[in-house]
Length: 194
Image 1 (cartoon, helix red, strand yellow):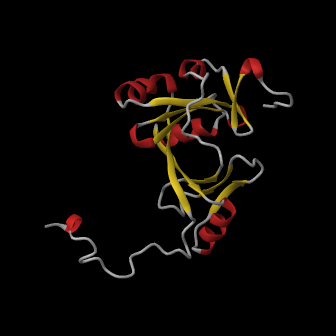
Image 2: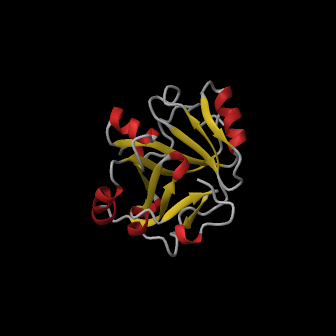
């Protein structure tokens, strides 16, 4: 009989999560993976791993292209590709190579999470509360044991695949991120800026 079948037997007292420090996590949402080419990565994540394409597009201000795939059991992978040589992601890949970039965690309220994280001694950076549908902050890798954690609150269901967006169109640069949504380049809303 092992620990898996013994219930709480042998479970030390005091190992429960500390609610005073918990950022009230709703779910671990996705893993961001930096790649030189989304097109080159699609066969692995879609064809071999069975990922269902959800959505993606170009985030022109950040000089990156993204493609999100939902793997079995709602785990998602976000492929991140630099759009040009000036992209921060190009510098990241040049320094670290392709691979793990970040983990995104959804919380009830990002402002509360910031207070909780800072009170526990973790450094948060690049906080952006300007978009009501996607409010975020990051736990810096130096503070996050070498990992970049993106902490987000959002009421949008990010598991639902976009009905018209295809990975082929994303690779061709036909979709743009703007105000927490993707837009086809032929239907950009009034006020869209890059």
